[in-house]
Length: 308
Image 1: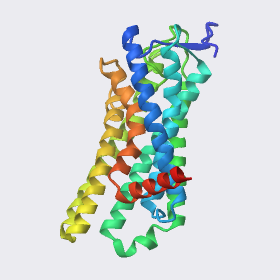
Image 2 (image 1 turned 180 degrees about the vertical axis):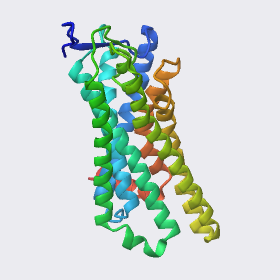
Image 3 (image 1 turned 90 degrees about the horizontal axis):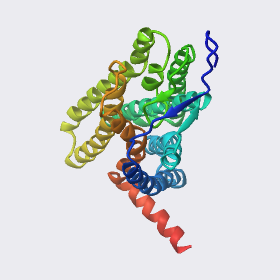
């Protein structure tokens, strides 16, 4: 990328999560252990949903896709972050930075829209049970899945297009452990007020509106289940509670990062760590631990393979 004054920016230097070597080693060990334990769990969820004929309901179809999205999302940041912990100089090329940023927002927005779809699925299942099988048929599920992928792509391509139009002529130090919009914009050698406003509208406002919409939808669902039988009510409340936990884990950090002007706060890196590494891998696991059908199917699958 060449600017008007001839300066070429070909790479960015990542300052990392912390400057302390001891702290880096501790975080490296903790993240590696967490990654090696939870990531196989996500793949086990995907394999279980795909292989068990009893888990064909839309809820499990979307759960499998959530596990896939979260596992893919973790691959964007975690492997490079772990390698950078062991490197003296943490460097990423300009193209590599843009690529990481694209897939980060592509999969992140896709997951955000998937949570909206899952809320819609629960609303139909609980509030309109007689029409559920008609409305949430396989064709509808695949159409919703395609729509959320296209929505994630559209969101991400706008982010990248705005970044590509910015001139970068130094400095090239990103104060983070991965490439993201707030840190990259700060390095542009031009007035970025309008671009920041567009970014906040594209990421922050979208996240906030989806978050409020999801909370409102689950509030409606919980109000509607009051008249159900005790068993049906408990199952619906358990499912909705799980969904609400995931909504807070997903949208809380995103709102903190993207709904304010792009200025640094001390908690930014810690919030980013949980947003990009910890919470994505935990989301499907939390769903599974509170779902008796999936847990029973996973135990059956594991026992079959252990016997073999």
